[in-house]
Image 1 (spheres, rainbow, N blue to C red):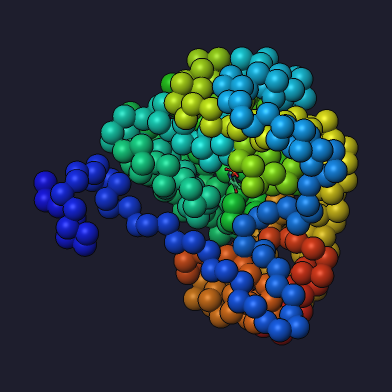
Image 2: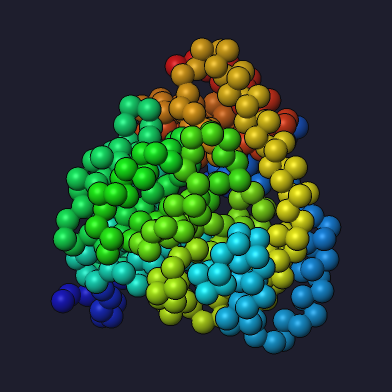
Length: 364
Ligand SMILES: *Cc1c(COP(=O)(O)O)cnc(C)c1O
């Protein structure tokens, strides 16, 4: 093993880690005099925290000299009550990305395979690589949906985990209940199937899979949820898995000790207590999504159906040009390779500006 030529450091790292590119932080919004900038690049909730959630955080701040509850008992009990799921089936982590990494780490030895659609959530290849596993990426269909038949065909004796992102980040459509059931019937029951429902609160498609119902009857299914999107707690880092006890327990074993901090725990509980208020906000974001999609469709845009809090412009080679047009109007958006541009539904003024930019750019 030779040292890294760039730093000429003698330390030995795992080869998969050395081979990974460094994280590229998103571009900060360039300040433009007189133009308010909106960050529509990370699918964040544009609403600030509810007063009741802020109060819980302020109260919790009085005891930050103490370690958090390592077993996350109160929050897990509150989630268990909200979802009507036994508490031993809930495993938390510092965001559902971390929970996903814990699942892959618990299931995969070096060279084992993780199957997922592509393009999908950018974290999937990364958590797979870090675990030393091999990513098996299956292209989306012409409607930007998962090709579950091709994913089933890609399963081998080395496959340990299949990731299903519904609705799919960044393209928007959700997986339907009937197609998922048919898919699961073909998956060996020792392979974990993760349903990543990060955007489930925004789903309005009546045919969408209902992850928890599927989970109840299938020991190999895991549902992933997060407080980062609909609940607006992205900065606090808390998410969870609903899994049958052996898998939930494995996810707890692979967690960083005391990862979910005490403020995140109390804020998540307060958010579940304030579910009605938060779901009004979700409804208004869904109404904004429908307004934007309606306006763009009237302009002639052909868009994939989105059941999440973002819209996908599958512009291929024109992606950068569109993102530049957005940025010139003060909208920071996410370009994903040469596949397209993902734009989060934000404040009404930001969404109206997106409609104007899209009209000036010209429908595709
Ligand atoms: C945002 C997102 C998550 C959740 O991220 P955390 O903030 O780590 O909870 C998980 N999956 C997908 C597909 C996402 O878009």
